[in-house]
Image (cartoon, rainbow, N blue to C red; front, side, top):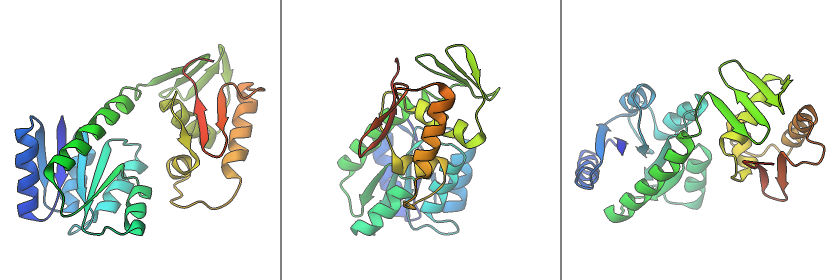
Length: 226
């Protein structure tokens, strides 16, 4: 895998770089957030290891910027801040995993490799055409067809369906949708998701909720076939 390590502590950065390289991975490093963000945006990586507190630009800002552009590369956050609230904030900012310093390298390696496998599955779905059952989304032409019929969707509805289809066969939680589609990092306690899902189902002709299935109390799922 190709991994980017963004860490300002020289000893920790060198320690991680050496260990990951010895494990057979290709490693790039950055010592500040600005450089790290530039590399993350302009280069292709399988996993990012991001320190939370960085000079110039902090780690959570980097993650939010990447997620805002649709970059779904797996991110492991490193931090000396280990309280529950700190971990929750990191994950809600778009991090996939959170490891508190000091850490054992063997644990970091295991988490990085697990994220790499997850990122590979996600990136394999990031083509220009997404398909699930009778649905087909052309991301370049911005067109959706359901059983061969063109479906007119508004921008938000298109983004919502795209996110669900990228994770077809997997549960997509309300929190994931709020952060990815509405850029909310908290639950505004409104019916915004329910309203848009209802409209989307109607336009797709999903009368029996067989295309977008509700997992009660958890979220939604689009099956690979229906």
